[in-house]
Image 1: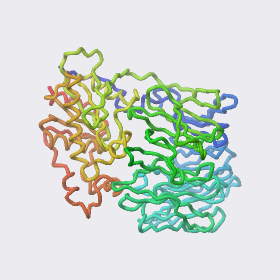
Image 2: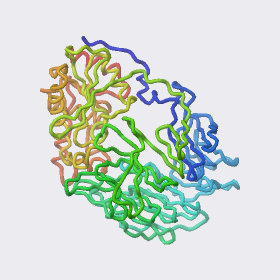
Image 3: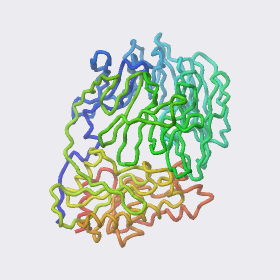
Image 4: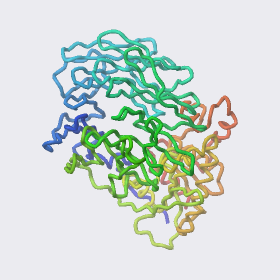
Length: 582
């Protein structure tokens, strides 16, 4: 029998379980300091800013919270943040900024702080107190230094970048289409030249230690891109690498990157001689083993010159940290694992210091970052499986104290849907699912095709057929799971998702009512034609060329077996699913 359970803290979602834990970790370029945010305790969301001096192990609070984000000089001796539109800094006292401050960022030397404003202008303030407008066209709808709306679709959250010597800023100008400009701090600027009509999407921008910049740009179709080096004197560009895929190019976060030996690192895919891998290449040479699925490039470790990456080898539910040889003639692509416990590990690097999860490593010495996080309220034990001939990652989570032989209704938890991994070994991400399980459900999560982490072909099999592939995989996985999990009652199946997952939950109820008795769609995508083109076209192609594909992916009006819920309505969702699956 299904019963409701109360757990008020879940109203704050799983992010609350991380209060008091260090996050937003940054390592200084010389490895001397590590900055991070951490609140005073497990129930305090107001994160303060802290700095660890690595040599002494001393941790100092720089400023009380709430601080949502910060930026630092190269050595982190100067940190800057904004609160209520005001500028704050750990460096020399500054006069009040002349405008409302958004995203303050010190230059690498810490002498100048740049910031953007709500009306889309870019300003700089120096230690002498001079606050000057560097670029802006107020009242025109044109913005400078602000990431354009489609930037987030490529994981880019910034719209301006300091040069290594602090004399220039690379800034995006957004006026319908975007352009990129080199702004001299004390007058003068040049345009960055590339074929913006053919390659309108700016994926990433990264200055190199040599004073040049690297940018990655994509065609509107996202099937072809270029990695370009930028001459900071003239703005002229030179092609370093091409990116191509018949479906869509998936750039690796942290690339392009200039390696210590002068080669340019880019992400790519290996799809021949039996390989199906997401790898890294340096000037065309394979740098990572084909069996390593690279999720992110962290940076270069100063003392060994090894490349630090996050990825997985064979088990997509885990993420480990790897050190990759970059030296030429090192005997082929090799990587060594730096984490050995199952889980979802992350890293940051600066100088000869490496931070893995919340532990600082310098050589053989380790320093844990202090934490006041509470223990997680649940200790979930999902059972991980690979099912069907497609080896779909799946997991089943039972109520605490479940007695084998007791049949349970099933809740298929889609989360944010395709494009996001849900079958992961991270206890914090199973807290809400355990809450649902303890209400009387067997909670099932399946990473269908279209999900990263397995292989490029697995991820891109959904191109122009996302609805059919995703629904087929969910249904096939459910039936396959009953072989090892006979307590799953497939006559009582509910489905729940958010955003793209909400769209898929609604689609499941509408098109596969023979399997899904009811569904909860939280803030669902309802009309693909209204989505940002980079997102919609990545999965469905051009609307002009494929109107039938967009029509096939449209939702019908919601029926009585579907609850369309805003975020945060857990109690209503639970009662609806209990009623429909009773």
